[in-house]
Image 1 (cartoon, one colour):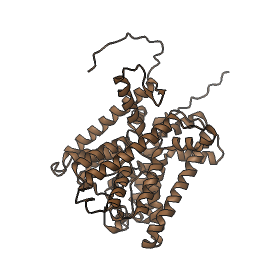
Image 2: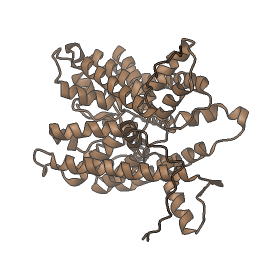
Image 3: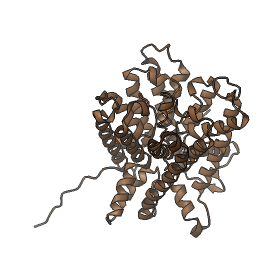
Image 4: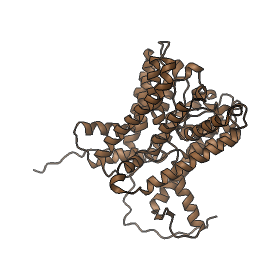
Length: 454
C-alpha cells in the first residue's frame, strides 16, 4: 500500500520577511504599552506605541514622543532591541542562533535570510551569518566606548547606557537618540560643537550603510585579492554622495542664520559632513531640518530617497540602483547595445529590477505625499514641501522631519506607518509576498511588439 506524505506548505522568502517584521512590531507595541515602559508609569496609547514600534523596527526614527522624555529605561531598552532586530534583520538573527545551536542550514533557510539582504543568493551562509553578528557587535561596542568619553563625564552611569543606545541606533541607521535632556526634540543640535560625538556617529552610520555584502568582501580580500563589482559601486557612490552632500550643505546652509551662519568654518564643515552622512538614512538631526531653507530640504529629499547600500541597515532605493540608472542612460546616449559598469556588462534582469524598484518607490512616495497632505487636520499648516519631505523620510527610513509628522492626524500617521513598513522591506518584497506565483510560461510564445518611445 503506497504511503502518501502530506505536503508541507512553505512560506515564500518575501512573505516570511513581511510576517516576521509584523510579529516583531506587534510584540514591541505591546511591550511599549505597559506602564513600566513610560516614565509616568501610565499606559501609553496603543496607536502611539504602534507608531514608535514600527519606526524602531523599520529603523526609521520618526517618533511622536521624545525618546528620553517619555520612555523609561525599560521602554528605551525595548526600543533599542527593536532597532537592533530591525537593523540586522530578524531572519539574520534567527539564522545566527540556529548556527550557534549547531543546526544545519538548508537552502530554503539561506534563501530566506538572503532576501533580507536584498541579494538573491548567499554563497557561504554559515560563515557570513556568524560574521554579521560578530562584527556588528564589535562595531557597536567600539562606538559605545568612544561615545562614553563624552557622555559618561556629563551624565554619569546613565551616560554608559546613552553611549550604547546611540551606538546601536547609529550603526543600524535608526536615528533615535537620548539627548532629550537638553531639550525635547533637539536631537544632535546640542552637540554640534563636539567632533568626537559627530564623527563617531557618522562612521557608525557609514559602516552600517555599506552593507554586509561589502563587509564580507573586505574580510575575504586577503584570499581573493580583489573587490567585487558590487563593493566597488557601493564605495564609489558612497564617497560621491558624502562629499557632494557635504559641499551642498556647506553652500546651502552656510549663510542661514537659523542653522550654521554663526559657526566657525571648521564647525560648519563638520556639521555639513554629518548632515550629508545622516540624511541618507540615519535621521539624526544636527541642523534642525525645520529651520533649513527649502532648497536644502529639496536636496535632503533627494539624498534620503537614494539611501544606503543593499544588504545594509539603511533604506532608500539604494546607491547601486542609482548607479545602474545612470549608466543605463549613459549607455543609451552613447549608442551601446549593452549597459556597462566598470568594464562589466550588466544583465537585463538587473536593469529590469532597477526600473521596477525605482517606479514602485516613486509611486509609494507619491501616494504617501498626496494622502498625507490632504489628511492634515488643516492642510494649510504644513506646506507641500514639508509633506513631501516627511513622506520620503518615512519611505527611506531616514526619520528626519520638518514638522508634518507632528501636525498629522491619525489618518496621516497610519499612512506613515505603512510607508515606513514598505520602505524597510522594499516595495518589491511587499508585492511578492502578496501575489501568488504565476503560471509556468516556458512553452508560451508571444509575438514581438513595437511601440514608439519618446
